[in-house]
Image (cartoon, rainbow, N blue to C red):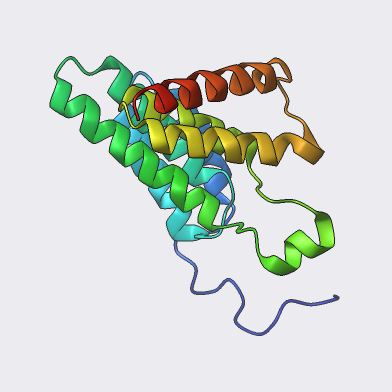
Length: 169
């Protein structure tokens, strides 16, 4: 490519290069000023709605808000918002029949599935927690994890959850 298409970037407000600044600032503000961080993350999605990782950062921010909330209803609301953001992240890179045939991957984005499992555990949604742990393990089957010790933790949690579920039947 030797030239940009005619009109490219001329109607972009804010300019695309500004999402890097917003991401960095939002990351710094996630715990001290989460509402501002969320607004900055949403600005990034306005600039680039397909930007991978931003919805996960939104989910992480909401999860932190839920962890620090003192009111039980607020905790649940923040955790639900976090789950919705994580689901939006997963939707950006779906596993399709074709991708499974080509790669063997049954799930991707292990970190998001790990985070969702944690959220569903906090919400006492055992079925969803088990599903997300299973997807996490499938996602790490071929690609491992940055934190490989989590794989063994997930396997143990799955075993505990399925054992408890079979006792409750």
